Amino acid sequence: MVSPMRSTGQHGRPSGSGAGEATSHGIDAGRRRQYQEYCQRQAEGLVRLVPKEAIRPLYRTARAWAVARGLCENKDPMATLVRYCRELLPLPPFECWLEDYEHNRIAHLQYVSEGPLDTRTVAPVVVDASDLRIDGETWTASLSLFPDGDVWRGFIGFRRGSSDTGVRTANVFCEEDPKNIRERFTDLTSHTLKAFLRSTLP
Image (tube, rainbow, N blue to C red):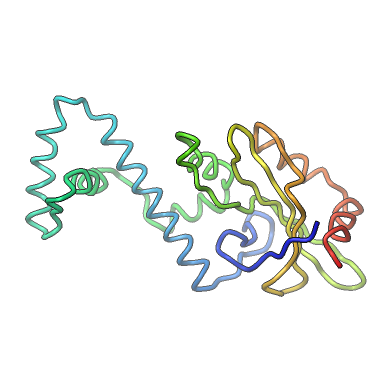
């Protein structure tokens, strides 16, 4: 099955694979958006941990803090509360978060996929990659994973050289644990990867 694959922030190559991800405005913006979502989830998690009887006093403090900074949202008290909780948490700066993300993508992927199934909107994330030499050309085979209900699915994308476009397989992996898919990918021989690539080409 042939599927087009375009260059996006989700399809960069993990730095842990031995080659740096292409630095582009699009990828950087995507990572910063993921970081902001991470911080938002942490703040919302703190709010959920606060006992019911402590919510009102905490909101009064949050509102005073927001008013002093011109950030108060009278129509959305919860937004003010979450923003204040985000300020209370010792969240890592973007650079620290990014370094951890690049080295522990599966853990981050599992984190953002937590919660009710109907709220999961997680795009495929590249978690591993390997280079192939075919007819004197270098191809990069990358494994992308995403949650699908109670299981995890994965596909292999291929790019030739520094091209910003490529091809991908169908969702050829399905496991309950994403780590099992990564192990299966790393166990693939170059011969098998080349066979997968040939299956995607016209």
